[in-house]
Image (cartoon, rainbow over all chains, first blue to last red; front, top):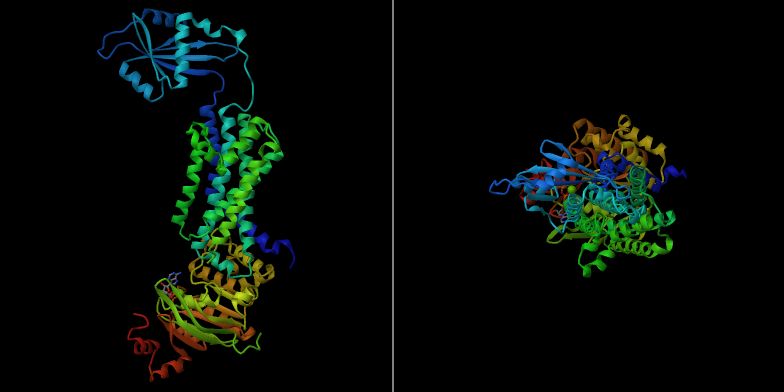
Length: 372
Length: 246
Ligand SMILES: Nc1ncnc2c1ncn2[C@@H]1O[C@H](COP(=O)(O)OP(=O)(O)OP(=O)(O)O)[C@@H](O)[C@H]1O
Ligand SMILES: [Mg+2]
């Protein structure tokens, strides 16, 4: 009779956990999808090894008048490997890393098509008077491509490898895009899993009249919510560990700061979003309405909280507001711990803020909560 | 508790939802071991009345006593006393029938022995391991009945427990209920749209329409009431000018 396995809290946690892990979609969206996202974005934005720069050379103007720059072509003939109508130029620099320039000789209309598709970042119009470089100066990648290409054609390919003495490469970890991304994804995982996992479950239960059936028994209401939150927390922890494991093994992402501080923050983040989830699911019994509410909470934070890119690109006046969003608090503090070696003293305020948000929302949610 | 003459006593209870007056001042008493049926067309207020007795909805006016106690002050105690099935409940799709029953058993601090007993009682032994998702409609209703019976309730409140069941399954449920009364003097409040069910199972029939009780008594009593009607439908026409079921 007093066996733990007969206790209602135990059975509620088991039931909720079973419900989570038996849903294949949950496993996909919770575990596989974040890893795929980290992998895809990590590959796309983290340069491993040599850089690749693509340029187009326009050989005729819009009137089909033949353009010809003997200097540029003789430079390429001498230094680059020619294949069909393209040249590939290998530049070496021990400290900067090697760079490969690919020049595609093509018509001007095709060159602009390639530029729009992102296949080339610079267009070179070459004739006897010299070379003209067309690119968007606001695009840092294009600007760098221009500098390299114009330098080597003026001073020779050896110039790329010169000045070795003045370059002092920093091998700081925590400065790559993937180092920025992973803490953000971990925070986003907590938000998404809590909001969909807890809120949606409650709303769905309410609409199926299961909530009212359960509270028409001696079950303690607090046990039901506690079990729901606990099962979610365990799942969130597993998902976070798997994502971190992947990032660590595949990209070498490291936690430079304090593990206990990270755990504290993880718990605080879960408290915050559990509370918010209870609040947003406190009344509606309509899953469509529920969908809308959850999206309205989750989507803005996903965009502004700096999961994928820094929120410092937003106007200055709005940044303080963004910084107090729960997802921003989590993502920023995770980043501090991961990349800047932060410890307890650096993140306790954020942890406290998150916990208060969670408890406040929970209390408000309980006031509004419709069990029947 | 059986010293109380009435196990359930409903006094002048009213309930409205915005413009709809779902229950308009209903009084009703039920003795221990008595089976009563609530009969009436859709929207008559049967579910609303039953859910107020179950403590799920709160009357706007009037009082409800169960074993002499009220929901406000004796919630936990009354929960232990009643068993119920709602008109529509979907249990968790991804749990098995057995896990569902274990879950509800834990609310009453009951162990797996009681769960096994219930499965035998409702005749779902071979479906213990099936996911709720994969049960047929009738099997789900049996599961809901099993959940209602877990705590050996003194009062059983079943809202359309046999709707959509085939005649055999319906008869099985009737037998389970009659057997329960024989063994432990359970009281039953049942809502139904089947006149033969009310007739076969219940001591008393309560006919509701538009939030009021139109007639109440044994089948014989209510038929002779308005001057010798041959069927409930005929009685209903004489009371309201409408058919009970079109
Ligand atoms: N939550 C609610 N909000 C608004 N109106 C409601 C609500 N619940 C019931 N009603 C209304 O109260 C009236 C009685 O409903 P109730 O469910 O009690 O009928 P019923 O006799 O059980 O009908 P049925 O045989 O269809 O189950 C109906 O008019 C219904 O529309
Ligand atoms: Mg009903």
